[in-house]
Length: 314
Image (cartoon, rainbow, N blue to C red; front, side):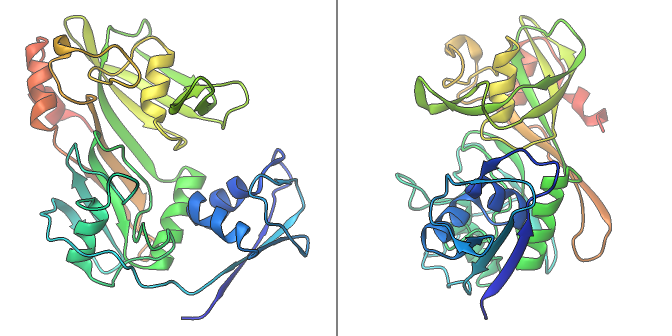
């Protein structure tokens, strides 16, 4: 494979923003890989090499990203069973169980979704995300269950990433939250970034990255409710942070609420339920849903609801 060159122009209507954020948002590369390329001197701004990921770019600036050939993964494939909802020669849709980490990281060097898909796909995975994240288009938290996309080719990866950026790709979550929102449906438009008081958490902060979620109450329960959340942006922990922000944290979420035994679930009650996207090769609109996992179904039943209710949702 040869080096690839990505020539990007900052849009006229863009606010000044960090170089690493711009590269991630407009190139289809992961932010981590974009940051590495910047630090390695592979990125120029208006013809000048810039090695600081935090450097600011403004409307009209031209950003040139030189992407080296993809290196083969050094990770060891692991024959971990996968629930594959859809697969072709371009992409896969997988129903990830709660408890599975998506890609290797400190403390999670084995047993991840990436190790499993390497065993299933071999070398037929996109390298856009870097050698530690082959095929990974977007993430799910470890304790969040549900649908995640995997790209087998670089073209498919960039096409899906572009749909994420343009909001053509739709992601819907089901969450069991504490209490019931006052309004049956609403919009949460609140910027998100690292919590200045606790770096392990994200928070709504005035100068954070724009984040927009839309919710609808589907089923009131005893002291709780089931809500559907549609993401218009994809910030880290967005659903969890936004629901906490409006006073209705996800049950079982030990990071963002006072979870305990009374929550009757051992992880955050959050499920990536539905994915709708345009196939990057065929142009066909595709939509998939993942059934409610058993632990969330039991929780809803314990709180007086009928899990079968969700079979009729679309």
